[in-house]
Amino acid sequence: MRIRRTVAVAAAAAGFMTVTAGCGLTGDDDAAAPASASPEPTPPFTTQVVAAEIAGLARAGGLPAGDTSAAGLPDGSWRTCVAPWKSDAPDSAGAFDATVMRLRQHDWEIISSHAEQDTTYRTLAKRGWKLYARYEAVEDSGAGRPVSLTAVEDGCHLPEKAKDAYEDPA
Image 1 (tube, helix red, strand yellow):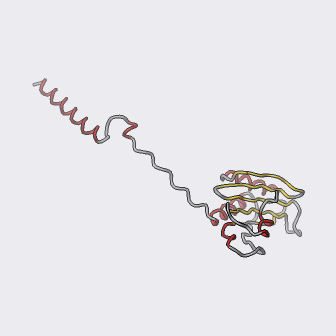
Image 2: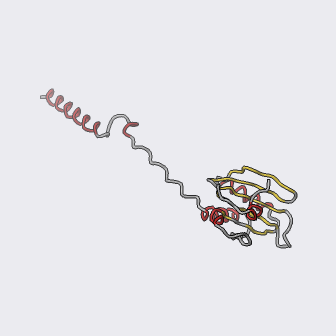
């Protein structure tokens, strides 16, 4: 009787193992592990997203609220692929550097950096955009020192007047 019970238990266990192995409940842990979930898709890096990021990082860097218009520049479809930001700030060299540091912390990569006379230029890139950062050490009519942070989407065709106002001349 004892041998029959042992044989019956062994047969039941073997049957259970066969069923559970076929369902993936036992066996090799690597084979049974579910595939890892794919990361969430990266949201589009639109003009509005870029403009909000620049404005937020400029404020976090210590710069005052900026003007995001393209006032004084020609109309055209080019405006849809540009995110301008500019402000005058008293003694803003430290805030300019802090803003560039924050941009770098948010995956903007410096691709060019130089100075000409009293103007410091930094060109950064991220996800199909170039950001032209400019700090002028000379006060602008007593209002402060001009700072501009203008992002231009790759492939955007700027009119000459906008290129002069936005892009790094080097």
